[in-house]
Length: 117
Image 1 (spheres, rainbow, N blue to C red):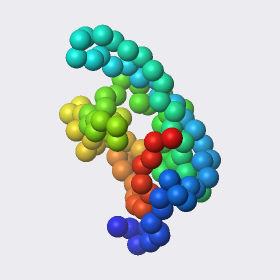
Image 2 (image 1 turned 30 degrees about the horizontal axis):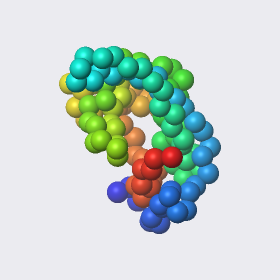
Image 3 (image 1 turned 90 degrees about the horizontal axis):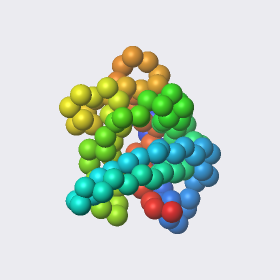
């Protein structure tokens, strides 16, 4: 972990930080019966707790950088991972940030759980 990572564990279900920004992703998927569906995912972001990570994600969303990317890991009713911008393998191991030409940066905080709301 980076030396400036916060040590406190945060559970948004019981001690929710303030949502400072919201972004949305318009998505489409095909189910096992080959029926195409479209929808919108709205994501609330904790900018006071993770300012650098939120700024990166909001900037990339405003640039429409996630258009055409794939969710490459789906855990039903729990989590999705995707949007490895510029990763031809869609493995999630590469991509780019909004801050520079390098693909990664140190996250602000490792101690927040994902929640469904």
